[in-house]
Image (tube, rainbow, N blue to C red; front, top):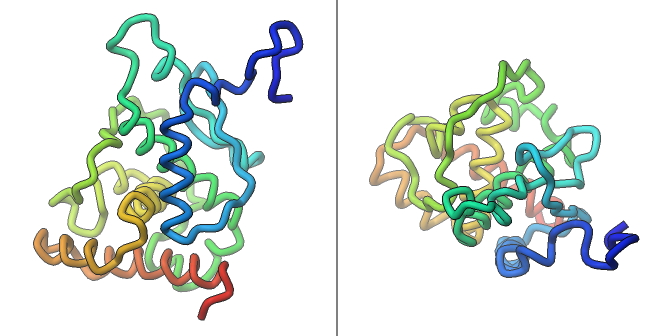
Length: 197
């Protein structure tokens, strides 16, 4: 149900974030990632994706409709947040891929226990690769293999799948070989989904 039965307005909240959603759709298109029928919804609580419902991406509504300006985030930050959460959705939607040896070697065991809630703030607007840790694109990616994938996905999409530019930056920041492998694994899987070999 997209329309509210009482007022007739958009019940999903997508009408409040059209600029960010348009940007994300364009980035996915340019990165050659096929649409997997995901839906982005504004909901109270926390941003995330439930593995049981991998196509539903929930975004914390106070980031968009906060009563105080300090709760709201810029649309470019929202693009980063949506892209990160879409990384989780993409992974859950293609979960069988996580069993392949090449994926496990690059990202690790993604189904290992995820310990506790994390209240750390992630600056999703940042498009620069962090210097540390050596084998992850950001410090947040080092928290769990699923976050590692979501952050790798975010950088891949926001950089439009341009591995040459990313790899040049990795070289400047002396990143480990495993980080290169993560992006190659993702790139090759995206190509395989499109029927390219």
